[in-house]
Amino acid sequence: MPTISLREITRDNWRPIALLSRTLPPDQQRFVTHNAISMLDAHYSDGALLHVGIYADEQPVGYVLYGYEADVDAWWIIRLMVAYAEQGKGYGRAAMGQVIERLRATPGCDAVYISFVPENDAARLLYESLGFVDTGEVEEGELIYRLALTA
Image (tube, rainbow, N blue to C red; front, side, top):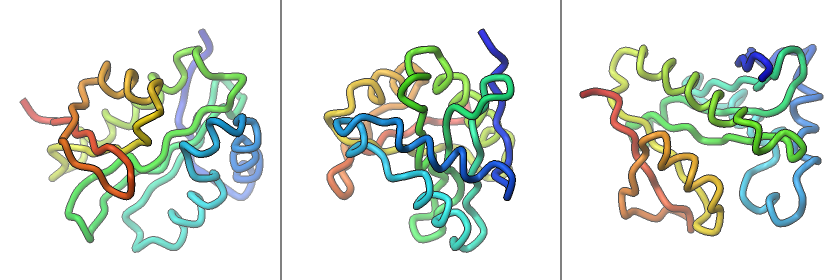
């Protein structure tokens, strides 16, 4: 398996990562906001959102947006996207593990939330396998899951 890494979004790599959204078939496009919109969210947020490209060795294969949402006083993994041809290879799981470890090392972050469309069975299986649990809440039609980061 290639080495999976998270890399800062820069003027040199933003476009290839943004264009990864085009690889998703229509039935998956409804599950995740386009990467370019997510990049704008990160850029114009209050500074508490971080975004990174997911790389398999030197190839961009996905995108993650995460950070602190002050309006709800909680840490969130807001977006996870893996290019269609790269799905099923463990890249999303590896990236999620790295993001979770970054958040675990963040002072004051004792839990992280994630949401997804109920029909997205692949997301549900991945998140549950990582320890996220259903909160029973639904926001804007998406299920809210929580992962405790402390013992």
